[in-house]
Image 1 (cartoon, one colour):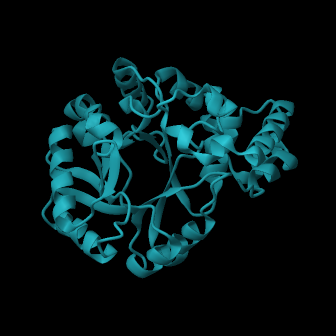
Image 2: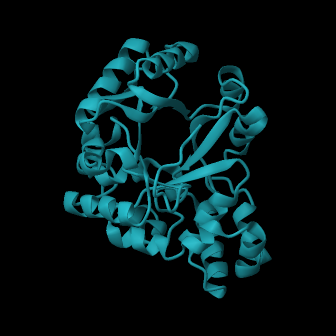
Amino acid sequence: MPLQSEGAVLPRLWLGTWSMGGEGFGFCDARDAQALLEYAFKAGVRHFDTAGFYAHGKSEKLLIKLSKYHRGSIFISSKGGLEWEGRNVFHRASPEALRQSLQQSLKRLRTDYLDLYQLHWPDPKVPIGESLDALREFQQEGLIRHWGVCNLMAKQVELHIPEFAGIAHQVHHNPIHRSDDILQAGEQQARCYHLVYSPLEQGLLGDGKSSSGLKVLGKKDFRRSNPYFNSSRIRLWLDELHQLAEEKTVPVAALVLAWAFNFRGVSGVIVGPKTPCQFQTLLRYQSFFQAEQAMLIKLCGQALWQHLHNPVNI
């Protein structure tokens, strides 16, 4: 699956727009979001991930300007299968619903095609095969260049993704939310091109204030429903992680992202900063992302590296 784009200095680093939409992750100024997108493009990022579901479509609209001036140079991925109805979320992944969602995304993004369109979540009421057949049809019609999936379980990957297909699959995976079995299923016979999302677990594994837990989050913050933010076991694990990282003067966020990039079966990592400053800080440590595992162990020490790999339960 050709996911390389011209001028992509960091082809494995994808920029996600969910938190930029200004809903569910605290305030985000639209001007900061636009500045972030422009800065990322100038820095060599070419892959931008969004969804009609994110911020009720606002996150997709943030890419209009970038698409207008650089459409041939950027790779835009979006998703369908989840919809808002008031404050409630519904799975809607029938062929008809996916087509309607795709048309809405194309309209919001002001483009006549998407580089990648994915099934956001399997719909319990619709056979996965029917949803995937619809995506293949969109590809044949030229509405999308590639189709992909998100959030499949290991068994679903084995049943529905052909061998050697190289289908993009977005997987929730980080040191405290492990999806090893899913990555292994997709890696077998080259079924999937794995894109890891939420590598910092919505900021909990970062160096910022959200790593302090629920007490710093607003009442409407989506992350308040994340059980990891209120787990005593996770808190103890995090305290030890920060202590070990401080001894080695290694930024936790940079180390966690390096862990994700080096995990077997991972082809790309989707990050979700909200401001240019946050992204600049991330890029300051891009040498970590490109380092081999042996070099990372040398930089951070065996104890710290091993701590990242030790599974921790809620």
